[in-house]
Image 1 (spheres, rainbow, N blue to C red):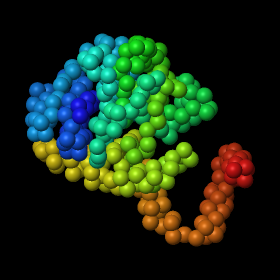
Image 2 (cartoon, rainbow, N blue to C red):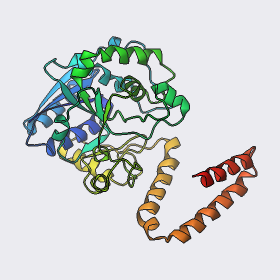
Image 3 (cartoon, rainbow, N blue to C red):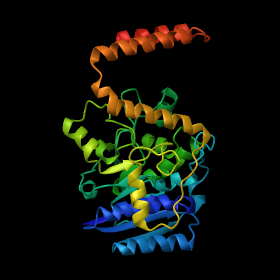
Image 4 (cartoon, rainbow, N blue to C red):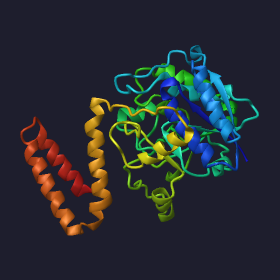
Length: 343
């Protein structure tokens, strides 16, 4: 089966792109893969390395050097997203960059590792849908919800793993809508391209099972729409691992599931792979997330319900007393208790 895969990278992200592509090639050997790589100024040495990687598996890679003028005045908030670049917007140009004979393309961020066959996604009937994607935990607040144009009942999707229906994009002039909105909302977006894509395809995106985007340190998504079989596949047979947000496997703080990334870095043959120092503002959150993950995975299942209830109440009491020494804190504590009873 012919699979069209797209991604974006630069010279700084080459190591991660190599690992991601190697994982795609390795776990989809029976398919004919063409990679459409979007970049700006990727060095000839970097391109040669990726071509050799694709050739090793009998696959093809095409390079698209993006004219940044096509993106207009889109911007990335470097304060909130210091590791993000303008390259996150390249995916908005897929419909015009790729040949019109290509009706579907599977877009992957470079911080993912593919562990299984992705061909079933190309068989989906996406009539009436702009993209197929996995539900995200955002929006984080009402301001973020408004940036995406969602109402209270609507959910958002993650833009890191996208089956893109190019036929739909071309038929409804989605590319121009996306670029116009990205420029109009510059400085007001919370998650850049993801907010823009959610705004354009609200009500017109196909929800994928969570096995297509397992995130590190997540036990199982709390979604009543999924079946037990979905949870089992997510936990034991994920197709894609997505190292989302600031939790990356190449940082100097090891994380669960980070082994998959390093396995495919090695298989890709990338020379002298580097471990990156974690930014100071992320060190504590990552460590706390690891503690919560291990407690939930290995301690929580063996704690009797009555013990858990007592411990939670004790924590609430301690937190409540600590709040008393903060302005308006007791009021916040009372609201929290009321919400618990309301639930």
